[in-house]
Structure formats: structure tokens, C-alpha cells
Length: 184
Ligand SMILES: O=P(O)(O)OC[C@H]1O[C@H](OP(=O)(O)OP(=O)(O)O)[C@H](O)[C@@H]1O
Ligand SMILES: Nc1ncnc2[nH]cnc12
Image (tube, rainbow, N blue to C red; front, side, top):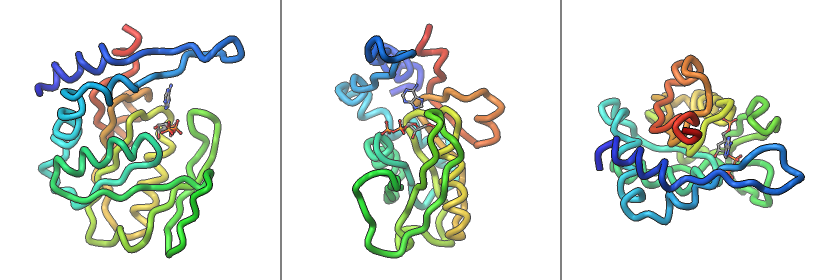
């Protein structure tokens, strides 16, 4: 699917929802993206294309929505996928794991992201994937984690960038949409 067609479908399939009177702002609902088979087929090729020439060896994405998107991108590139887990849930990883703390993210929250050591090493050229980038906190933490393991972070690819363009440039972030597209 051409990028223009994917952009149109993503915009059409997206909703802002009002969580109720206790909330001060609208919350994104991207469930329509996963329901549309044409979007599902188009996401991997579209998100991977800008980084294909740099020959990534692996894709990493943070839980939880990143775990839906990351494998689609990895599959389009013909490489494997590594999940980055948050230290906030029930899950405990019972083997050697490298952790990196985020700065304060878009919810004002700091958390650690962890990747199993045996899945990431010095020969890896890593493409980071996420659905939505706001402050960039998760992306920066993953870059730090990749550097700690001796790997190379090639950049990041996302569906939506909420950050200013200069932050996207600093992060080497390519996005299909910005939040301006979703408010139009
Ligand atoms: O740029 P940042 O400020 O770091 O924010 C971006 C992160 O926020 C969302 O995750 P969220 O924590 O809402 O989790 P979810 O994937 O479980 O919805 C999104 O999936 C990114 O991972
Ligand atoms: N406004 C938002 N809605 C959903 N996920 C997000 N991640 C970061 N900002 C977000």
C-alpha cells in the first residue's frame, strides 16, 4: 500500500475518546487500526522502508502496544523481534537482563525497560519501534539500553509523533503521522 493510502486509512480508523468527567483530556483509541486487514498488512512494509537500506539485524519495541507493532516491522525486514518489558507489572524475567530507566514520560512517570541479554549484542543494528512517541522517553531509554549492550541504534520508527520536529530529528525518528494529522 502506498504511504498516502496508509495515512488516510490510519486517520479514518482513529478515534479520540473521552474517558469521562474525571479526565482532563481525550485519550487515543487506535483499536480500529488492528481491525483493518489492509492496515495490518501495510504497517510492517511502511514502517520498515525508511530504514531498510541500513540493514537492521533486529527490531525492539516496548510493551504493551509495541508488542503488536514490532513483530510486523521485523517480519517485513526478515529479522527477529525482541520485546522490551517494563518493570511496572507482574512479569519477572528470570535471567540476565539489561535495564535502562526512562526520564519522566508523557504521563510524568519514570520506569525501567528491560531486554534479555542473550537476545541483544554488539553485532546488532537495532531498529526501535513504537506506536506513539510523545516525550521520547521510551525511545531514549531503549537507545541507552542498546548502547549498554554494545549494539548500534539505527533510529526509531513510529505510527504517531507527538513531539516537536526537532525532537524527532534528534531521536532519528520517522513517523507515518503526527498528532496534527489526527486533530485535523
Ligand atoms: O514518548 P513517551 O513519553 O515515552 O510516550 C510514548 C509511550 O507511551 C505509550 O505507551 P503507554 O505507556 O501508554 O503504554 P501502552 O503501550 O501500554 O499503551 C506508547 O505506546 C509509547 O510507548
Ligand atoms: N496521547 C496519547 N494517547 C495514547 N498513547 C499515547 N502515548 C503517548 N501519548 C499518548
